[in-house]
Amino acid sequence: MSKFTAPTFTKSLLHPRYWLTLLMVGVMYLISWLPYFIQFRLGQGLGRLAMRIIKKRKHTIARNLELCFPDMSQQERDILMKKNIDNTGLAMFETGMAWFWPDIRVERHVTYEGMEHIHQLEAEGKGVLLVAVHSLNLELGARAFGMKTPGVGVYRPNNNPCFDYFQFTGRIRSNKYMIDRKDVKGMLRALRKGERVWYAPDHDYGKRRSTFAPLFAVEQACTTTGTSLLVDASHCAVVPFAMVRNTDSGRYTLKVFPPLDAFPHNDPDAAAAYVNKAVERSIMEAPEQYMWLHRRFKTRPEGESSLYD
Image (cartoon, rainbow, N blue to C red):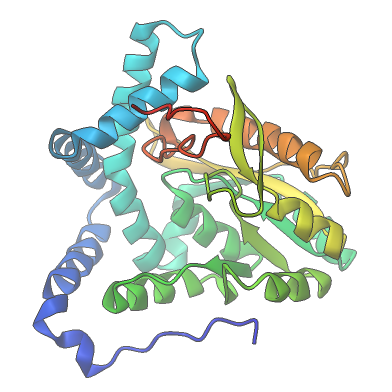
């Protein structure tokens, strides 16, 4: 089966071990109904508080910015890091918006650009690999996109079954169904049937099915070759997109870019470098809204020392 079996809410999820999870989700739900500008301010405060407590993550953000943008002045990177920390706190509330807002409220906050590319591919019956990046508002971007043209989500079950129930329920609202992230055959079947499959190749997933390719100023970033595998085996289109928030207006713009027509087929190394260029473009739409707290360059070529020590 390619479709991921939906988790159900059972009495066992009311056990005291899940009370903190239920409280957190309840708070997310209640906050999601507050006016947007209040959520924005609360998110900024939460991000700053979290970075005081989890100082290691703050170091990761600073190091990633240093590695990717060595030509920036230290002052410029400090400003970018401060904005990123504010956005990191807001991510929790944007997740609540994605899971709990009614469609009409999402539509009031989102403007769409480039959806004609998706409509054209849909008319041709061509499968689409949607190349996403881990922006901090990705959950909201997926919800907004799915409201216009539902796709298929690639899903990693959460280790906490209580949180997993709410996460799955929130994500399925604007997706046709979910596929386990390890189910490559399921992804290929969906693409060959002309579905739109969400895929985020921008993180470091380890050495399995990966190669080293340039990303920003880092010449050797461990990059998945899964993109190449899926495209070559399904002959699907590859379409990047980005979700960008305008901090001043509280509105979001979902930008769908033209299909990557020059994708290098049957060459995983060249494909990884090519996709990383598309990833860079999406990130640079709003670099302060990207998940820089991920240790993107943790996997190194044999014999190289860590970039985070």
